[in-house]
Every structure is written in structure tokens, then in C-alpha cells.
Image (tube, rainbow, N blue to C red; front, side, top):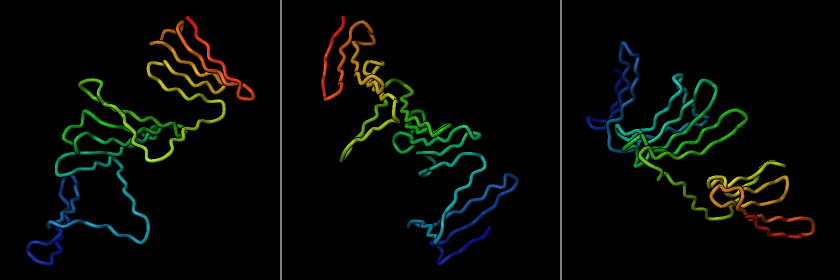
Length: 173
């Protein structure tokens, strides 16, 4: 154990414990802890997990899964529970998923409070789908926006924008 102290109340210890080879840096003071580096800072966890904790509560983690995905989890209420969360997953080709989970129900809403413009752009020829049960489809290939009644493909309204701004609204029953 290595101990660095200014006085009896302000010190840091570096401890390596056997047999698990667990290394702990403990700061014994009420103030903060600052890492200030003139270059880059690397966190390298060969186990694939980096946990963020406040006391014993895990409020988030970053996870790498055998070169298949990278995920960031943020848990509800500062880590009071880990069964309800927000997750960002990145897989092959940069495909990214935002997911919320309410383990006890369907209340894990995703709210966006934007103080400015929202710009959602997709690659040329790709659709933007607002999936409320596949009821709204913005089709990039045809220029037709489709609004369905509760996934009933027979009941819909289409909005078509053509050359020179010609616009057609049609309904089907």
C-alpha cells in the first residue's frame, strides 16, 4: 500500500490486493479529484466494462462486446435501479440504436428538448420512418408520405409532392 498525505484527514492510498490483483486508488477527503493531463487520457478495461458509480450505485456503464458492438447505458434515478435504462448501441457500419427500457411496463419515454433546429437527414434514397406501429412512412423513393390508421393498410392518407411543388392529398378506405 502506498499512502500520500498532507495531514491526517487529507490523503490518498494506492492499494494492490492479492489474489484478485484488484488495484484501488482511494481519496480520503471531502473535496474533488481532478485528472489533468497535457495529452490524451485512456481508460483501458480488458474486461469490456467501464462502470460509473456514485457510492455503491452504478448510474452508467460503457460496454464493448467482443468486437460486435459498443454500448452506453444510463440507469434511472442516479443508479437506484439498473432494470430501467437508456442505451445507445453502435454495431457494424456505424448503425446506431437508441433504446429506452422500463422493465415493469412501457413508460420509458424518450423526450427531446431541443433549443434549436432538428435536422434528420438520411442517405440518398433511404426512408425516414416515424414508427408509431408503422403508421407514418416518409418514402424517399416516391416522395409519398403515408399515414395509416392503426396499422390498417387499407385505411390511409397519402401526401404526394411532385415536380414544381404539385401536391396531392389522397385517402383510401
